[in-house]
Image 1 (cartoon, rainbow, N blue to C red):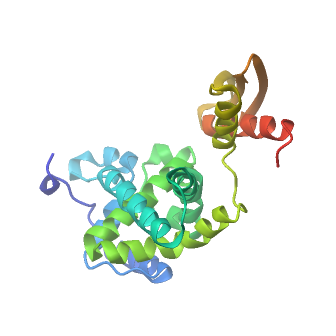
Image 2: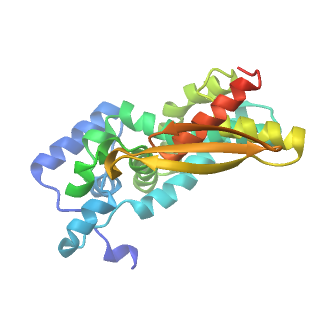
Length: 244
């Protein structure tokens, strides 16, 4: 499929009003509002409206990931003197799914996403992956509409406080990364995570993970997603090792 084959959903006057409000609230200005509409269109909505040839935001998400990465990397390089590993560590925190989903909530992106009925019924508007992907798509849409400098300025207006927080070690820690760095350095191996069980219906599952390294197994700990459960068991071990 070429770029010309895809299109945003038909935008009603009511929807245009919503999109203009979203821009006003978040300091944005799109010349082509259909780019913003596509950025806010989840694949579940597009799949339910195939007859209208509606494009979802997955292609924009792919591009937005790169726009985001370059913007953050450029800022770090110009403002902090670090080695490559430290740059990577800082960037990984501020562009993480958790961080982007939190930003999406701050910008009330969840109120404007177009999602399918099935996804709506299973709490799609609150799913971190959907919100984070949508933020990346918005970054890409703004880049295509206004150029890289405008997109970078928008991204950094949102992320500079998070960057400062990570640099000062006052952020929400990525315990999986911390534990892996510790285990690699001390034991020359990596932690292995194992799903022990999952309980509950599809829309409200709990996952239980344990982690093993150096002939020891810890856990299990639970979470509402596999990533959360892995983070929780890594956090448990990190504190058990005596670290903050």
